[in-house]
Length: 193
Image 1 (cartoon, rainbow, N blue to C red):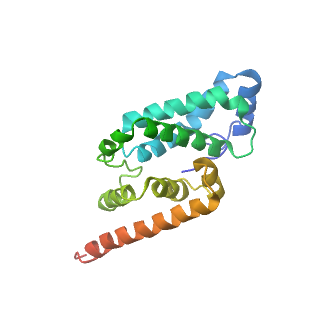
Image 2: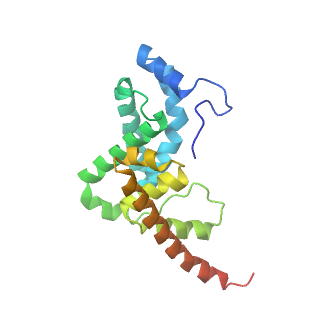
Image 3: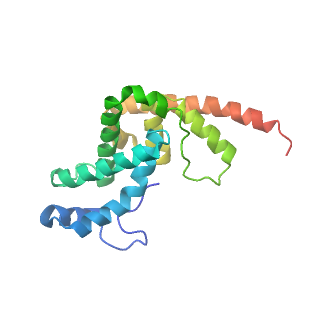
């Protein structure tokens, strides 16, 4: 989920302070703090997008942070830094998809990795399968909305789509999930308690 703009204990410099240090002084320590702050979140998102392909997700996360470092001087704060990082990660993912379009069929066979394995393994397995049945755009928009807590305009920035299109992807994705998971609920409600 979303992390605060300060360190895990609520102390430490804000993202804005760290960005300023990196932009003005190429401060490696400040950049390392930013990477640590967002690395796990970005890797988990990319693992979902790559349908559980951890090696590819890790490569894409590394590429994301290399690009962030290279272009951080261009960051102007028009969106939040968190939104910008996700935008870069999403574009790295799309670039990879375009390069290896035939390989996406193989990647689709991988199961999605759950972030919380102790919350009803059967449900999470079925939820992940249902997410995999959504179109790429629906799955990604739903992930950004429900699992990462982004607002529709932020998702539109990340995915480089109009807000209305994002809302449509989320609505259709949620409806499809509800349809698929209602079947799961019906199957499991017949079991004795």
